[in-house]
Image (cartoon, rainbow, N blue to C red; front, side):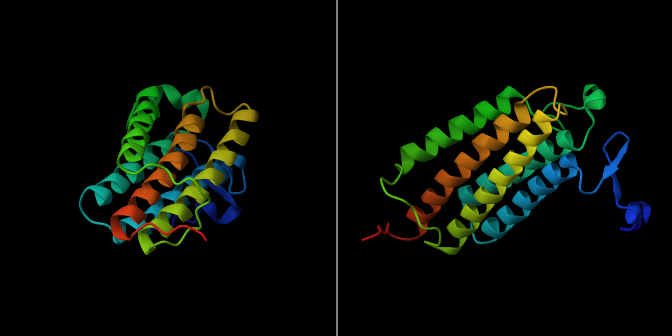
Amino acid sequence: MKVYTKTGDDGTTGLLYGGRVDKHDVRTTAYGTVDETCSALGLARADLEGELHDAVLIVQRELFVVGAQLATRADHWDRLEVGVSRVDTAMVAALDARIDACVARHPLPQHFVVPGGNRPAAALDLARTVCRRAERHTVAMDRAGLLPDDAPVRYLNRCADYLYVLAREVEGTHLPSRELG
């Protein structure tokens, strides 16, 4: 199998389960930005170990699910499998639980946070901002009538929140807390 197919040389890309769209289409922008989020998380994970490493890996794998769903036309969603290629309410609820657990371990700061407390936290903050962009593009898909349900939007919204609290936990775990003076 070759990496290049040459089918995209015309400025289009193939969707999961068929169909082609322009590479600048709102759909490709949305799932491409989800892919960027996953890559940014790789930067964070490379500097983490143990449970924090595994927590980031779980999100990366879940982002593949989101990306698969966004890369599939709505008329093919019946072919998607929950947790593999389709987001469901349980995935969103699991993020809620992870957020609550993070905040219980490391209460949220009562001040604005300037990213960069340490390298993995900065990478998580970068991933969070990319995730927010993915969320905005996914909302655009929804507004264009391309999403039969809003589970991907809700997942990305919660994911960005989770990455924020996870970055605060990583800062608390790796460095003493520093406040702006």
